[in-house]
Amino acid sequence: MFKYAHYFASLLDWAAYSTNPSQLELALSLQPLDIKLINVYADRAAEAAKFAEWSAKHPAEGYGYTKERREVAVRDGHRCGVVVYRPLQADSQGQKMRLPLLFVTHGGGWTHGTAITDEMWFLAALLGRLREKDLYVVAMSLKYRLAPEWTYPGFTDDC
Image (cartoon, rainbow, N blue to C red):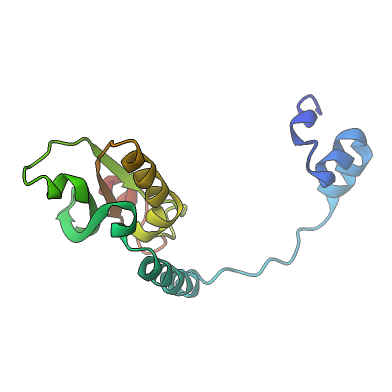
């Protein structure tokens, strides 16, 4: 039962359970905690404000890209927002460069997140590092429909 306990040795709670099976049995017999429900809409509003503030402080030009918002039709005809990131270097050469496409879907467990989520946690750093190495991509981040308003497989179909 505790064959893989060493993987969790850094978690103090787990360490106690992995060395003392009776403590694990006790923990499993306890009633669940009183967990407050999450207000998805309030969380999204708070995230949107935080992400808008971050985006204003960190323009895409700061890491060598332009950012363009568009809409695209997905499988069922619904229109989803996308943000397309193009390198400034490619535009300044006066010619159309053929670049690989990096297609990104934001995290958030299908219930949260936006294109700014990806830019904040992933794209800004990645695109900046690529530029340092004189490597470029066109990145497209999709704003898919979120649960609970949309059910599976809607969000995966959007992607």
